[in-house]
Image (spheres, rainbow over the protein chains, first blue to last red):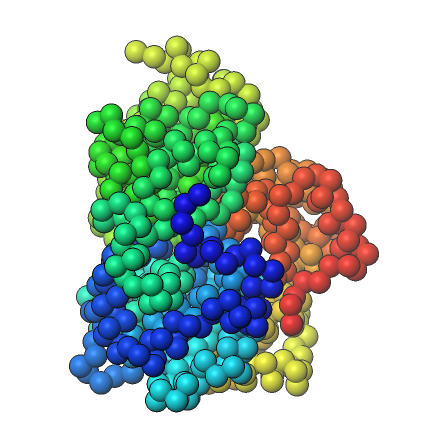
Length: 452
Length: 176
């Protein structure tokens, strides 16, 4: 059994309530930080821990904190990104639903480090029942004296509120999230200035993922050095993985970074292997935006080393043969999956979620969806594969925010690794027309028709 | 001039106004506009789950912002409905993980069951099946959202039961 940091107390009956959470050592990090540490000392511990942003981008949390403008004298804010919307990701929800006070404790300790006196948790509107759980938990924390003026006689003041979105993936991008929190459409801002200088209401702001903030209490209690001992190299600590798709035990798992992908998929402690023991065909290891991996690149890298659940190992091989840990949205596909249909499905998602601000993304995502749809429905043209490649390459890198890249990468990777399947769709339209949603005939059985 | 095709009775009850004022108090005095999204959710929930232009104007007045600042937000976010919807709107997640676990078949079944095409409201005004993008329940697929709550690991049988529960008035849509 691996070490648990975030889910250590998850099975304690009643841990959702303030009383039980407090009885089990909850809010101790607030006491420790406010009474015995300076804000900069807290930041240093988080830096030493080496924890990287758990929302997907993987930027070191402590470094992000150290960029916040403390010189201008403007009010500062910590905003928690609980907009969890990356397809395949459902881990933040698990934490907030089952142990809401952990996030609140993390928000208080982290806000203290940043010198923020007004902080928010921005949660996606669809998680409305969790919005209510958090709202009630914040009220409990306030009543117990952990929020408000002069917390524990330390002289530190903090107000914390939960704010809800209303159905927009783009609001997971930190500047779009800030716009949305200001009551506007979620259009990402041009950077610089970065939020650390000019964020919410033009004030210095740090935006961190739920899982990142929830790790702070443990780091403060046990030290950054202890945290950094877990994991491998620059992938320190534990990570929540949201496992879904054709596996026996879908769910949220906390792993020590460094577990092998093979163990994660097959061990009974985690995914428990493939449903009906069908063959593994493909893996999206870090949410829909990261490149899909074909079977032969899942357990081993192209160099032949074991593929591990770390930022470095999953990215090994770059775009050609690697992927990314991303948000930890781990989607496993068996041989009945149609890669063309799945790529079209992802493209539809990005088309729907594009904010429309940048032309390459607004037009390109719709174009990708349209071309993929016609290939999937047996109306594809010989030149369509090259067309898809060309469209995605013109979106990537040409937009204000990373949604454009996120829409391009899955298409590029699908063509790179599963080109024969696209060719099959185009050359044998009668076989894909009128097909059920699922592929009765795994591609392996027809591969010979297009094999070179 | 009438700007909305459908009529909506506006009823800003005392209870609703108290909740709106509480939400406004979560932001600095000069940043009332920040309360827009949470306020719109409350107002929509209290008005049959949709927002007419007239209702949006009312929200603009309360937050002391221009009506267009509300319209542009309502039209951007998918959870805000600009025309009437069924009392029970089943929002099925149709993104990859749910699709691989059979949501497309289930949505066809659900449409048959309520006797209405995808997106259309059933003749009794009670039900509607719509497809939405990833709801963050990938490990519990297939699933749907109904009001403030998720219904996960669905089967045809559990969907049938959900319909029966709706008809019997056993379903709470909002957690207030």
